[in-house]
Amino acid sequence: MAEKQRRDRGPGTTRRRTHQRNGECANVATQVPAFPSGDLKTKQQAVAGRQWASVIDLAAGYYAIRMDDEAIPYTAFHVEGRGYYVYLRMPFGLTGTPTTFCEMVATALDDLIGKDLVNWMDDICIAGDEFEDKFMKVTKFFQRC
Image (cartoon, rainbow, N blue to C red):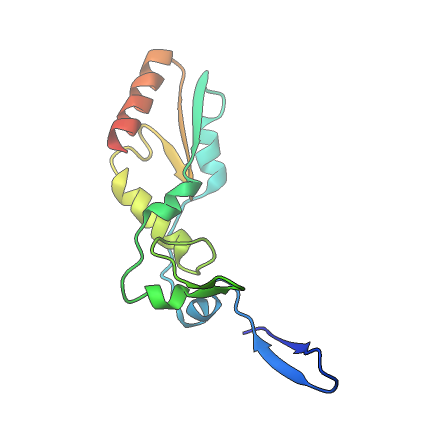
């Protein structure tokens, strides 16, 4: 945990303050299972050169995942002059966030990955040479979401 010293206004007085970065304590105690995402270059080559392509960034999807009740206290942070807060949804900055998010995407889109779309972390590409075929893939993706 990062520590800083601050000199108070009175001469010779020093007060020690402790600052915590987002999720730092939780990250130290977290064991994250590896989640294979595959080779990015191979995934890019699978959609390269297609006539039509749609790229979808799911970055805000991290906030759709609820925190486990027992993990919420570990996300606490303080805002000067406003008080203490906790995350109820998964924030960026926690060690396990990318793995948890990738597992969620893989579970939700399992039968589409590799056939109708390619994914890498929080990015999805749906590509095709025929507009109608690609449009059907995009429609199937959004119906799933």
